[in-house]
Image (tube, rainbow, N blue to C red; front, side, top):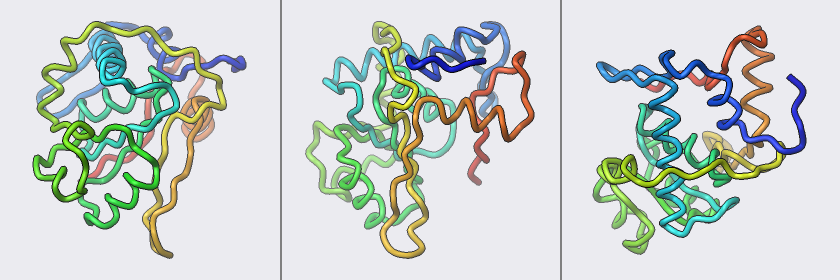
Length: 196
């Protein structure tokens, strides 16, 4: 598939996927691509109601799982930069990353994270907000460029503070195609190892 200048990774994946196929499995929870797409569009709609604009950053401090995937992909769908951070990281590391990326919003599973990161209350939401998020009116895909920033992935910081590696909208598509020997009939979504 030739990538055009205008390219939204999540919209492309959803448009090519069979809506009845399984997209995610987490313990006893199973989402089809239809459910995933509905949840992604609701996340994008909710982010808009929070005043988050394309190219702004949202830090996601949660363990791997369906909600985390929906948040990351919902950001990308809306043209917002997802910043997934490992909740097992030190508070100093998390504070550095949230500050460094200029996150406009933080979503976390730790109810005490607001105090730990010293953030204003309106900038942070607990994971329980997802019950509200999934009921929000859906948004349409942002008109993103293939080189638009989609994800900031922070390094481990072995030589100092973690550094952000910026992944553009096209990067997950190209990486998955080249590294897994997929052909045009496959629908790559993610090729990340799960955390323990």
